[in-house]
Amino acid sequence: MKPEGIASDSGGATGLAIIYVGQGGQNAIAIVSGSNMRMDASDVARARPALEKASVLLLQLEVPLAASLAAAKIVRANGGRVVLDPAPVPKDGLPKDVWRYADIATPNEVETAALIGWQPATLDEALKAARELRGQGLGTAIVKLGSKGLAYASAETEGAI
Image (cartoon, one colour):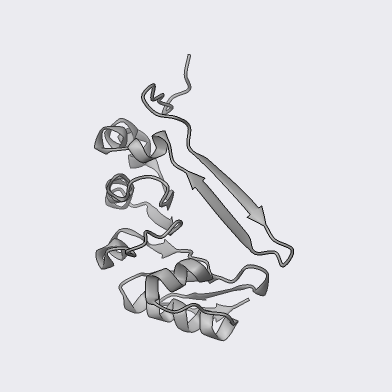
């Protein structure tokens, strides 16, 4: 018997991500997509009861964006919050209206560069980047710089740690 909310896809392989961490602590991720990229509206519909009860939904971009946004709409319509870890950022970036479906985004410096056109290298730059993401319509931006820390900006507060 399968646990509730688990589906199997006999037509697709299991997705795989291999994470390499270099001597300097930077990671590189190789992704081989599988069934994860076959998610669609029917999968979201099947998960609707759980999504309607969710207080927080964490999304990333290893499933089709349309499925993620459909899930986000359900969670937000029921009072929940949506956190988007925009990884991996598509080569063409993200549509600007994506931010209206996310409450918080948590890009690293490379993902931030794909989203705003430049890569922060210091905490001051990360804070500037977080502000720039907010300027695109995002409520809260947390820009991660690995071992250097992170910067955050929201309507209520901003800073770096």
